[in-house]
Amino acid sequence: MKKHQDNSPAGLPISVRWAAIIGLVIAAALAFAYAGGWLTPARLTPAKIVDSLAPAGGAIKGYRRNHAKGICFAGSFEANGEAVAISRAPLFKVGTYPVTGRFNLAGPIPTMSDGTGRVRGLSLRIQAPDGQEWRTAMINPPFFPVATPADFYALQRANANKQDPAPAKQFAASHPALRAFGAWASTAPYAESYAQDRFNSLNSFVFTNAQGHDQVARWSFIPTTAMVAVPPEDLKKRDPDFLFQDITERTAAAPQKWKLVLTLANPGDPSADPTQVWPDDRRQIDAGMLVVTRIVPEADGPCRDINFDPTVLPKGIRTSDDPFPAARSAAYALSYDRRTAESEHYPRIQSEGKP
Image (cartoon, rainbow, N blue to C red):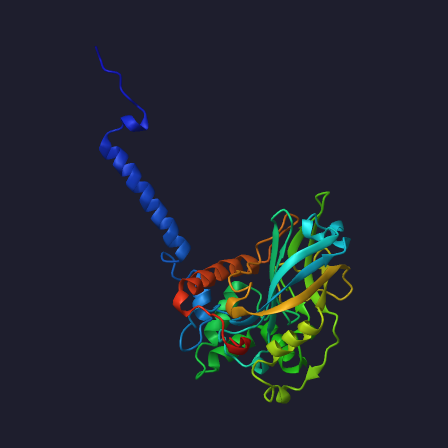
């Protein structure tokens, strides 16, 4: 009697089965190699972006690779319910939601002087009762200097050699948005406090309401404290940590507040280019108030271990065609992995709350 032939995978000759297994391993390895950029050297990767941010002496171990100098805070977001018209996100329903955040300065040096920080940042994690979160990292300029992640990397490369300004000049000549950003940086007033700075998302996101209608929007946190400008020449005379000291003292005296304003795009407004400012006549929604009640040094503060990934979004908000949030997410994740792996260098409690 002829034996029945087993056609199942287990019935295949062992050599064939091993070949299939090896093939799967190779395929997986190739996928990781492609993702890492090893097979495509010209491809932009998170590692290239993060590496390009390092100062001349190399990355400062244990710290964020950008916006390295920061201070933590705790507080709340008081939603007034107005934003439910455009988003079903639970954080927009009337209520008060816990916030963990971070004030910071752009740059890779955690000991930089506050007076040298042209770009200031505000990062937030707002938590809903059901576990959903909204994480966002914003800066005080009204627009971004470059339009794409590739241009951002090219800008870092152009500025890499401080002894040779030619590449930076060539890049600026071909990128008008960078020249406009330079004009803002050289003429916009410096606020004397984080409490007086307006922080902008710059990137656009898609808000979806309960009826399924989509609306592209950007947002800003606008201070309720009037701005007092500090002449640039006076900044050099201030304490290197004057911003930290100021926000700590202000918050100890009274909660500090920023109004969340959503700006809604009209059809045809550029949603993928953060160098483009939307016209002033666009509809805006006052969505509620950020209230900062406690400042904590970052060394052992509640924000130290948070990755403020801008793609961590509640239902009712999603990324748009803007390529930056995805690129930022990947770079932030790599930066987080690197700094937390450097545990022996990780920042801890230091005197006077100075990083």
